Length: 218
Ligand SMILES: Nc1nc2c(c(=O)[nH]1)N[C@H]1C(S)=C(S)[C@@H](COP(=O)(O)O)O[C@H]1N2
Ligand SMILES: [Mo]
Image (cartoon, rainbow, N blue to C red):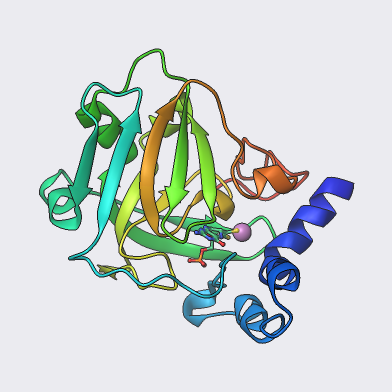
């Protein structure tokens, strides 16, 4: 419970804790935004000062590391790849859930195949263009058919607060794995714990089977 309590607090108040370290002026107001429910029941989270803006025209996704074809894809490149849609719940480890969210994008497995990810690589180290948030997935997890590099949510472009133009949607795992403002996927030979994992959350974030929670898997 010690770790969970700390971690859960961190999600809700991460913004304040962060700013408490770096500034006192902005310590409260932007943090409050992160605990207010947004439209549709989502709560909008960020661990930095606000939400980084990036147009579809400026967007790039880099796939690097242990791949035979390192590549940098534009938003238009991603649109030319096979699109996969899924409608599934979004579950944050702090307890809120949004049912039946339609997502569309490119399967993470399709991108890894395209880049020629090494069959002996064991994990992904994933970065956000917010400059702070990171995530990890094992290669086995990343190759599942419900791990999406999402470009649309509710049939619309993903908004900036929700991590647009491109974010991860890791359906079988708690929301902290669904990194927003996706910028880089690095294929690596060991799991590098992500932002919240360094702060106490389970690396394997299976819904209902981690962080001491007992949520219904969805
Ligand atoms: N870059 C970034 N991605 C992130 C987060 C964050 O703070 N920064 N929070 C995570 C957590 S804990 C959750 S529950 C979801 C929330 O997604 P939303 O902000 O679109 O509701 O984003 C995840 N991805
Ligand atoms: Mo979360």
